[in-house]
Image 1: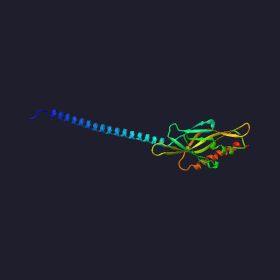
Image 2: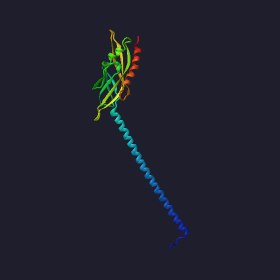
Image 3: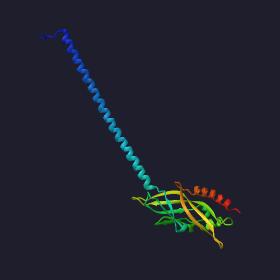
Image 4: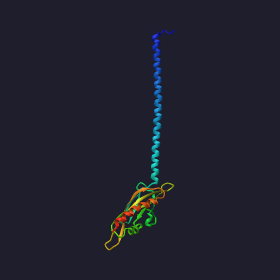
Amino acid sequence: MSTDTPQEKAEAAATRRRWITLAEVVGVAGVLIAALSLYLGWSDRREDAAARQAEQSRDARKATTARLVGTVERGGDRVALADPAQPAVASIDVTFPRALGIAAEQTIVPPRIEAGWIDDAVLKLTDGGADAVRGRMPVLVAATIAEGDRPAVDRAIYDVVFSTEGHTFGGRTLKLEGVVFRERVRGDATARLDALWAVEAKRLARAVRP
């Protein structure tokens, strides 16, 4: 038979309750810590997946786009085109504003724009005024990127910067000064190209007017 006094029994019961409460607290804390660990692990995995997806998207864009930079060669007779970040550009197709009547050109190794493609049309357009004229001709450049199993084509409008100069004994020549990226385009950009040239042609007409 127990000899505990009522006070001792009460204290023992209180102690058991405290241990039960502490065990419950520890259990709840354990559940919370486990839940937090699961959430942090899930969050980290989600961030890693998002980072991988973003990197893949950047790689995909890089594999299908080019931003060509021009290097003037041969004293302005041509501009070589290249993208330092996109060495897989294999060739380019260059389309000119329809009003100029210049046939489209394709070049490879290296992709380039030649002064001889545009000099007749520009010199004729600017004839009758000052010998020295400077302008920009918008052109549509379709760059073929030969990377992977399926070549991609990146289409963008560039400005071909040119200048003309006269000679002591008559006549004028055209020199290329560079190529400047203007905008990337999708689909048929003929109308956009013609509209840009219409603005520049008016400016040139005013510039060469006697």
